[in-house]
Image 1: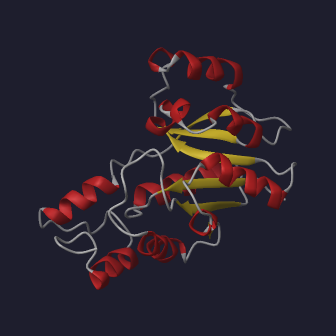
Image 2: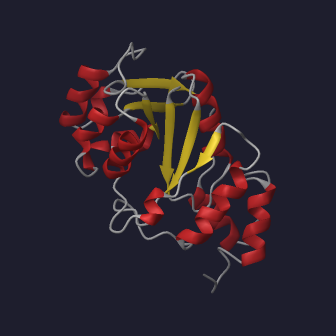
Length: 215
């Protein structure tokens, strides 16, 4: 089986930054698919603005026309906090020990990795692909000592035959789009058109998400 990418997040809402990152990393890493896994109860972030059912539906609308993208609802079905280490463990059980897994992270998320639940165990389960702006290298000098030690141990331009355990830095197109900015735009009466798929925008208007006094 080809390698599998994992893109988790609140997707509140999903936008072209998420989708383009997944597409480019899928091509760079020769992934067979990227699984979009909405976080039901994110332990490291504030409570999402929209309920998980809406966020899941928006993800399914956004990825419907891409055969490389797969919707995965395992964090929605699981009780308790949505810890990525538990998600990866369940994927390993499902896919086997030999399939390469790649956890897809933006640079900011990677720099906070050492604050994740049982974060060192992640390397037993997956590679980590860190998406960076073109020409901008990750600076070990701004990493925590613990994360820097793992970077120095695991950073590599390739994974070899290993199904997990490496950290790769990957350049992707810089798209300065964020879910928080989209939500703020709605609050200010601005349109987010061309920042996210039309199908997602239509869903937002249909259900009056991110409008004052809704959700």
